[in-house]
Length: 370
Image 1: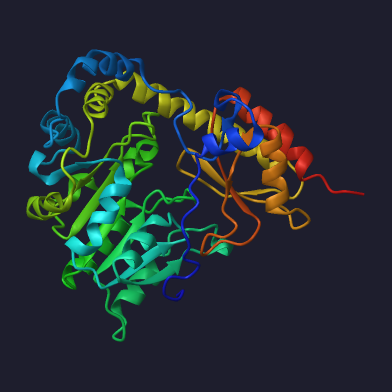
Image 2: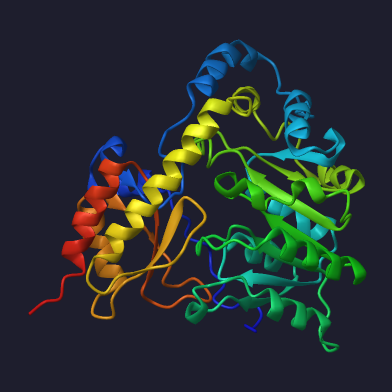
């Protein structure tokens, strides 16, 4: 198990196309962003129409309760609207959790999204990691987690689990998540499950189980699957009393009117959901096969819309990412993420044409020099 705050620095998230555009002196539109895991089909037309219709509402403050959106979400999740808190992206909600839940000590299942540790350490919480292992293709370490929780010398107030995990793409079964929730419930501890990428493997979601496990909470993002990260919106689901406490700490008017309107429309767009899942199922398989044909490249299994890649030992991540950026291809450098080695990058699954472009460029980057 990794030490407190291991490798903790300001997270370097993907998706900073503006900085790359400035550095390279090219328009943002000419950059192909594989570093942010956004649906390659683009923002649904239903959402864009809703935004245009809602423009006249910007003269008013947004609904601070997100009432209409919570009704739509509640019907989809099969829970009460009072069990849902909408936020300015799921990151805002992550940062509300440590103080509200009085988390003094937390266990993070890694290697994973750095914002959990940042939120916890920023409020004085003690953080420890339990990492999935590369040798096991980053399979979720449920047995090790349960063993760690039962150890007499350790006591955690919360466990943070990303499912499917970012950046490994591995997914823990519903049965295992529920087993973990039960173990934490017995210890009066919290389980926070981040399902930001669950839309591509919806059968694994545990949001409908929240009434069974009162100390489990589920984070969801609406910006990744529906391709609107510029609007910032996500939600947290859990016991209504806890949502009330969290809302008391949330800044007023946190979620703008356009994001609320777009989300309400897009969540009802079943055609977009079906097309997105079908596309991802097919293109991910093809993309993985093509990447694995490159010399020395290892691609780990993924249930999400991104892939964790281990570059060959004769390459440097810095050199590869820089050479790709020179071709206006932006990938996520994961070499400093706790639990991963220095050869790791993450790439989003994008359109077939864009994926082909990355494969060709990466093939040149990893070719052994004679």
